[in-house]
Length: 113
Image 1 (spheres, one colour):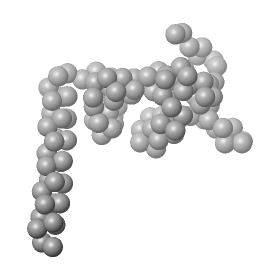
Image 2 (cartoon, one colour):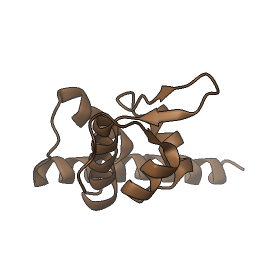
Image 3 (cartoon, helix red, strand yellow):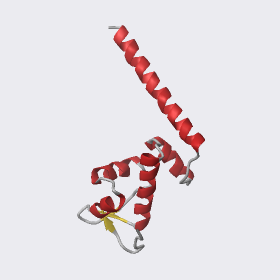
Image 4 (spheres, helix red, strand yellow):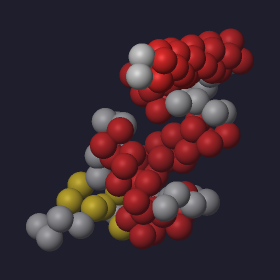
């Protein structure tokens, strides 16, 4: 789909274009500092074509590449849009380590009662 560089898109339009629910788009605004739609006086969001392209890229990284939000934030901070398999593997290992620590804490907590 070719987006007009001049047009401003409402959240409902962006949701349809990107196949990302509106509530997720709102969450991503808080999670990813790079998504900053302009607002009118009534507080309605208006996205640029650049915003929509970024949302599509974030969607791909999260939902297809399997990165975490933190992994996507790190990638966006470096200005990169692609990851290699080693980065994905590292991200997964870090997530597994975090889960393991949480499970161990829960087991320790259960044992202490």
